[in-house]
Image (cartoon, rainbow, N blue to C red; front, side, top):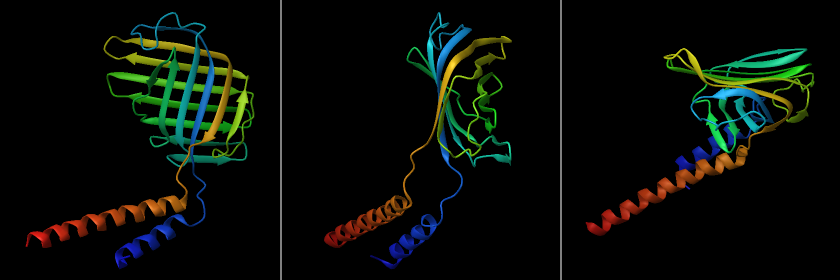
Length: 214
């Protein structure tokens, strides 16, 4: 191993071998029933009342501003929500790129919000589950069900001044919050080392071809 690769491996070990950070990438998955709404553009089909839905929010607990109090935890800002989508009838629509996202867990409720606005359309996706007492640690996995639900998916068209899609999502709703799979520290170090070895192999191969052609 060259001295450069040895240094890279050592740096990777130091970078990823320390204590685990408190931040985490989490995935919240809600399931429930559409109570009412309109879909003028066929994003999810027609006659949606009574259809089952799945709503997914993927977020970085350290991606924005964090407020932690004895009664709850809240992370919000542009870097919080990494992905959010709604699935109905096998059709999936993502919030394009959240310029604002929020996750809140308190002694009485859990709420997720993702908003996108490009000046032509605004997509608003919100689910709140109340009376369920989630953990106050945003990085903790858990499940909850029932409770009072406030949930809405809406796509507003600025040019028409109307909603292309406006759906109300109702109880009963279940929620599962899990930690997204991420590579272990040792895996990161081996990946970095592997890239370095691949680079060395390519350079050696080029040198051999140059010598053969000389």
